[in-house]
Length: 367
Image (cartoon, rainbow, N blue to C red; front, side):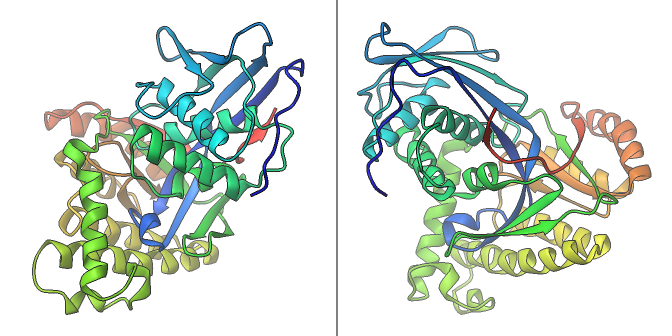
């Protein structure tokens, strides 16, 4: 990527929008160079940036969902900013590392993406911040995604793949994205309006508890090494059978079978076969529960209840350890699930879930 300079400090105010995402299927496959099938949500984050030459070498940011103001020195380094401001600081740091001159100014943030629900509020924030700061640049979507990933990996300290950022940047209305994380090719797959998509927020915020997310990534890397390859993408679907019984075998089985499910799900979605897609979502949830061990009792109950109340299929979505369930259903079943599921889950001693109907929305763009 060539070096780029920022617009003049006297440039007008810029407003950028980036959506959250929900993953129809394909969990923890991104950092294994596999496949995933996300949609950009019709929920997102808006960043308004006002360059200011009297502001000193810093950006001050305020958010409608956070108290106080985050102050980011333009020369910030990892470890200097924590909390929600770290995502903005990470973007500034990563942009400067890509030879982009970041302007000082004031930033105002509003968002409709619920935090901690597995809907990638962090990537929505990162992508909106980057678009606002680079409004006149020629940076491609793939370049912005990698800069956002570096911000999250190396500044914030979350070892995530590229799924969230690519989904936010490349989303289209009424369309899912089949992403190949080896080539970074994004193939658009239409989502028929007859398929109703529910996101069921467990109201148990997801936590990569005690480094569990990082532990899953390390297990996959160890499994690949045991199979003599650089990545699990480099072996066939049944290669997990060559590993001895134990954690690495189960982790590899999830990734390899999940990749196959994603490809089958893309075909089912394109064909409008909601029954087949639902069955693949169910199988994905079982794999995440038993092989990858990233679900929780609350999440399992929500997925099971959604199926019992009429969903074609339901699965945990996101990194795991809380967050949300995605369910695919007909419109009449959606109404029943919305009414009945929260009471059933809360009667089991769990937080009352929030059910939302979502549609694939547009990707990140300037307003």
